[in-house]
Image (cartoon, rainbow, N blue to C red; front, top):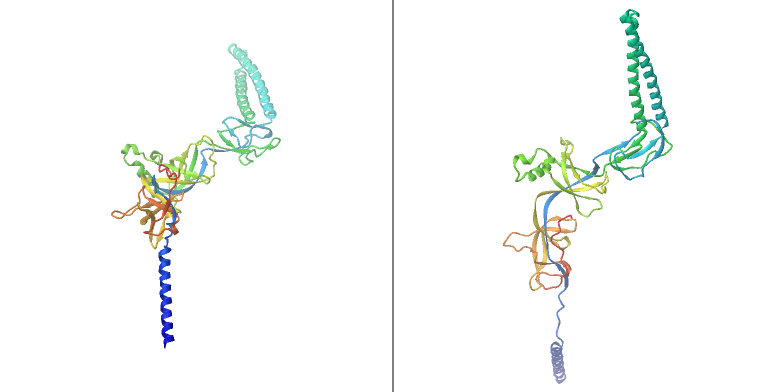
Length: 402
């Protein structure tokens, strides 16, 4: 009995000592909270932009010419470098001119024969006319002499025309550029025989470079909408009756361009709608003094809808999803994370997303807010964070696609 009581007292004393030791440990070692997580933050951007429609199009030359020979002959010399810019009238190919010069000289000699015969016939006509008046010759003799003179005169004039035609052949032996533009390579080189005619090989091609055309297919209703938008605020006599009068502006970019840095003006739409696609072919003209736009290249076309307005943009990667709702994480004045619901609109080429804030009294985004753009996984709503702010802020004056 005494042994059990002694054992119980010993256990109680041990427990008391252990509890005292634990109490001393709690007071001596204080528990520390982890620091707030670091996150990268940025201001929402504000840009001025308009809604737009996008189309696929292609570049075409205003003028395009297939250069062919108009006479038959051997190429004596090629006077251009493949791919260079040529001006209208520049010599491109030179055929051997000797056969054509010989034809011209022969026709001139033939004309000389006719002219000599004409002089003799006219003298004979004058002599017989005098004799007929005195009864020394028959009327029929005079009439024959008169007819001979007229015949030689007609043959002389025909020889003049033949000289002109042969001279043209001599001129055509020098093949010149019919337009100003960029020339292709020479399909036939020196020493080759070329024939005249549309079915014979093309010697080369030339395309104009300034200005250039942009072709694209647009929905008929959309085209009418663009015209109506351009006509707002104008008088009836200022609106015009065709697409060219509307002066619809488009922007476009090549496959290698960032955004839509180039601008053109619509100057033509086809006279009927394609029944199979419900679209109409439209064309815009763009200056290209440097000749950098290559015909046949694909382009991305954008046509603005309505007037420009100010919009709010945030990085698309900063937008989170909660079922069917979109939101971003913003910081209050104490760096505590707050959830701000948004409506996500169009995604831009630079990765920014147009956002629409909810209607009042709900809180929306402003350009002064700080939103979390990196470190979203570490942030928790209603908990503080340690924000890392950018040293510089992107300018808000940048226009979308430029």
